[in-house]
Image (tube, rainbow, N blue to C red; front, top):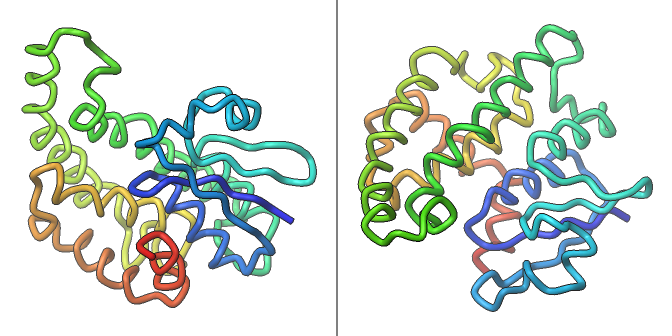
Length: 205
């Protein structure tokens, strides 16, 4: 059985939703970051990076959200969670990579500025820039990357739970999601999906 390690308020939500959408046989393990669970020796054996998500499979452990999402889609083809055409799949990977490499760090400068500087003044400067940086990222997504009605177009894919997850951070980052009508509509439709509701019940339970 697959085992997903997750923590509340993290991007692991995307992988959890994807597993549920895929109809996968899986279990979960919750980490409490406030207690430092991610730095426990037992967990560092699973993921030496001390981050979530991490997915234990029968062939080993996968980390990093884009990799986990792609693996879920490819190992559960009946769920049709990713394009099969190589070019379209590359575009899905490009979108998820952008969320991972650019949008997530833009957000992380608010709650985790200490990763980038030990100077309190510098940390405050970084935090103050987060609303602008996140607005810029989502303007690009809204205008150039979102095909509609789902991220990749007509078909739902693993890009959708990932975008939904990060969209959920906008309010805390000081950004009004309503500024981005397509993303906002996407967020509301995601919220209504049975798989999302099932996972949220676990994360908020």
